[in-house]
Length: 355
Length: 228
Image 1 (cartoon, each protein chain N blue to C red):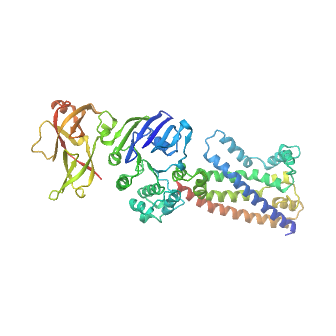
Image 2 (cartoon, chains in turn red, yellow; image 1 turned 135 degrees about the vertical axis):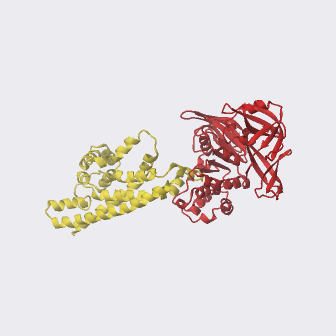
Image 3 (cartoon, rainbow over the protein chains, first blue to last red; image 1 turned 90 degrees about the vertical axis):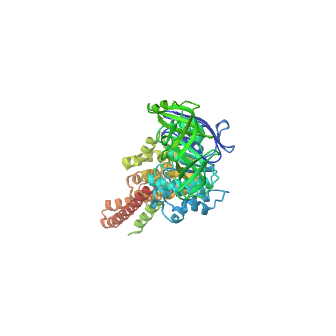
């Protein structure tokens, strides 16, 4: 478990939070630029001196109550930033060796790390000859070579163009799948968060607005994440069956419903993450016939909230054990006489598969 | 060349080498502090370090003479410590040269340190490198061209000093008569040919120094770019 109780006055706002983050999986610190999320990460790393307490698995790294502050170089962290910050006077191999030599007792085997990030062919390269994506992969490998107990990532994709982002994301997904290493991931891009995170901390003006499991927080209508194009829920699913004729797969979500989606090429039993965007869902009072939409789910309206634009409403519907969110016009919501407790059919236009 | 001339050459080389060495030791922490500090005292310290660039050497020499003289605070200190008096001694020349050549060593070092991004040092810290480790494994290699420039400039500038030497060192053969003073002496005595031999040597020396510097400068530029 990661504990962080921090207080730090900044220009324009005061960072003030008390967080308990899970000691496994990916925790995303999400919020607009300048909300203090990077400061939190730097305080965890010991690069920023906020007042308060920081601890990993009960081992305090900072405790102002007893005057304890463990300097950065004595904290078992890996730290990856937007600019990668590779050592320009060392080639890729020497950059990794730099970290490994200083890892102390935790002798890290480099081969799996090199394989995991696919940098085997880059080992003899000088760092300035690497592309942005390659640089970032080397930076991650270097952080892992130091044998961290906690990986801190500050917008590792922000400096990359869309193509490079798409190239790097699968590596990040492999990272969180294959390593039993807690990751704290700072981002202002909801797409990255939806793809990678298990736990979400929503920040604004130096404070925590909401914290919890990703699926839960994303399904809340009272938070900023409910608005905008990226609004929607994230569900964990298992590939249950493949339909070879139509190149589709049936994804089992929880015990009670399934979704049809394009075949991603995985074998049955493969765990997947599915994203249902609010703008891709529509609601009906009756099951629809003669429609092209292949996924219709029966559910019950839980709550209705206003969206950013006055014409739109967000409707949260419970399907089995999972909440989903649909964006409708308020006129439609009115015409369907939607209210909490009303049974509806959810029509899913697009199922976005992630990993 | 006469034995006196060779003695002047040897003395100058010794003075410049010792001064450069001392300045690298003293100048590194000063340059580092100037590059990284957010202290309000920074402009004052930077100005003090840069003073010899602007000040006439005779003015500096004059005040050093007063300070190190028998009545001056530094002079009284050295006498109390049993070190004797500094003026008109080689040790006095070294002290004066260190002060006089300070900016030519500190400023290139400061610039080299400033070119190292904070995040590169922070990355080293997150990879378990302590402060000294960071200095030797990151700062030193990245600032190496800066150290070379500082050494060359510090050495060359010390070789060329005249006014300060004359004020506090005088013209004592084998002790304080360095090249520039020897040349002046030859000219005074109308020994133009002897003056030529030394002066032409200095011209060649200066040319070699500058070519070296510009070669280094090209490399520094590239290294600084790569660090960004």
